[in-house]
Length: 419
Image (cartoon, rainbow, N blue to C red; front, side, top):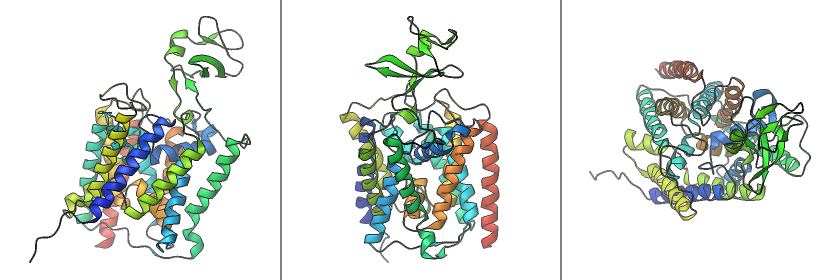
């Protein structure tokens, strides 16, 4: 009997797909996206949620319909239709999948990035991402233990065709809103971070724009202005942000973005490549440990290599643990948050990127997971549980504890259900 192959021909396809996705993600940073965030499924879904509910959930700094998500959905859908792989299906514990998506988003926003961004942060030289990567490995290991004990949410069944079109239809609606906002017709209920906006570290922060690197226009507080000494004052003349805090102000993540059409086309290309290659940001670790197959792992390696090379070429590579964009340096918090997120992804059967791709192929269960992520994003910001560059929020640890307990309960229920 011949020895089983641990690397098949798809390894090179996945490696090439990872290289492409990593390279495009790094290039999108040069086009205006936040540092080491050319692509982040969790962050971009969070920004989209902020556009619609940001006024309620305190997401003024992270509110923008990210065209990359729209492009990924439409690109994956198009590829699936051309290859006759678009199949409406679902009915496999959709509510549980919604909860798992919700929890994944919670862990990701405490870490500050999804499982894709963890690798991309590493590709940009952000060594603080190592704690998150170790957490991904721990979460995958926990998921493997549960899978070996028989955990299974069941298989989806063929559904009525309209149910398979929910996520692609949502992408079209999002595109319409994005175009309206881009051409100055943003609905009154919507929130959109001003492009190029900076925010001070004050509570509440002062928000302003720059012209040629110099503070130019005060956005918040309303009626505020710039004093001669460089501080920001309110209408009554009281100082709301010192000159030092203005000088140290950071760009608002939602205000850093590539041009709409650039982002949309990049997303379309990524969607096609991800759909055809079956790329997954955690599947490689799972398969390597569980079945000793390394094909998917080539995709992850390619992602890091592609991002690293392009970041080096564009002068965006910054090796170190500190002064990294949209990141904190709480090692234990990062490890635990990504352990929770990766464990949730394992119970879902794939990373959030994979859930978006599968939803674009007609999988209603994956669409429910994406809906859970959107709801989780709003909740995390409404409850002030999401992290910032300063570190974890005060109630992040209790939140992680609750999420971990729920995950264990779902894992036990799923295994017992099969038994």
